[in-house]
Image (cartoon, rainbow, N blue to C red; front, side):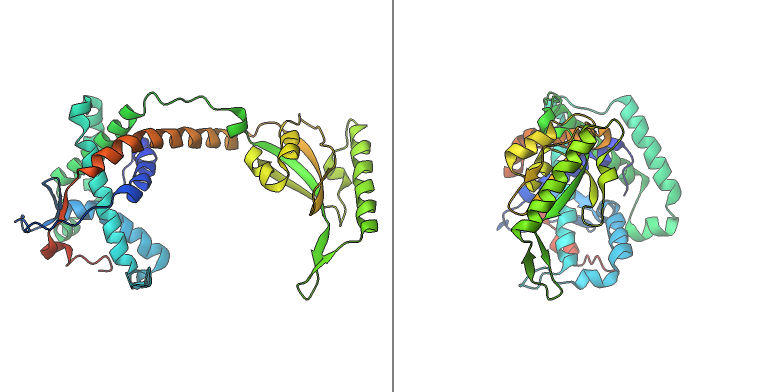
Length: 335
C-alpha cells in the first residue's frame, strides 16, 4: 500500500530502517493463543489480519517481482540456507509491528489525529479503493475499513515521531554540510601498464609536471578571464566535482583539505602534493545549494532518529509479538 503523505514516505521510511535493527523479538515459550481464522500475528494482543498484512506486503512484493523477477524469492541469503522470501516476510512483519507499537504510544503522549488528518486519510482511502478491483479485494481480504485503519495507523505513527523530534536542533555547522563546486587537475605519480603493473614516474618527470602546474596557477591567477579549464591537456585533465569537507579529506591530507574548503569563488589553491599525486584546485562555486540542503536535511534526520531511537529502544523491550503459526507458515511471497 503506497502512503501518499510526504511525512509517511520520508520520515517514516527512515524510521523503519532504524527499527529493523532493533526489532528483535525473543521466542515466546508459553502455550500458543487462539486467534481468529485469518490472523497472521498479534502485536501486544492486537491481531493483524491477512487483509491488513496484504495492504503492507503486496506493493513490496510487486515491486521486487518487477525489479528482480520471481527467482529472487528462492535466493539463499546465508550459509544456513535462509531464503530471501522468508527474510522479507519477517521484515514486513517488523514494519507492521513498528507502526502498531509507535501508534499505540499516541494517547499517552497526547498525540491524536486532527479533523484535517482524518479527512486526508478518508480521501486517501477513497482513492485507494477506487483503484482496487472487487476481485482483488476478495482475493486479499481487503476492505475499506482496513484501508482506512492502515492509513490512520501510519499517520498516527508519523505524528508520534514528529512529536518526539519536534525540538531537535536544526542548526548545522558549515563544515558539516556545505558542499562546493570545484574543478581540479591531478597528475598521478604512477600509472598502470598493459600487464596491470604499477609503474612510477621518474623524479625528473614529476618535477617537470610540478613546475608546469605552478606555471598554470601563476598564469590563471594573473588573468581576469582564464580558468583551470583553459589549461587542460591530454595529460592534465580537468575534473569537475561537488564535494564537502569530508569528501576533500578522503582525497587530501586534512590541512590541505581545509585550504581547499575555504577557497573563494574563482580562487586557486596552492599546488598540493601527496605521496600519490599533484593537485591544483579551483573553486567554481562556494556553495552548491542542492547538495548542501540535502546534507543539512540528512544531518537533522540523523539527530531526529537518535532522539526517537532512545525512546523506541525502551518501547521495544516490552513488545509482545506472536505468530499465528497456522496462517504464518502458509504465507508465501512468491505466490
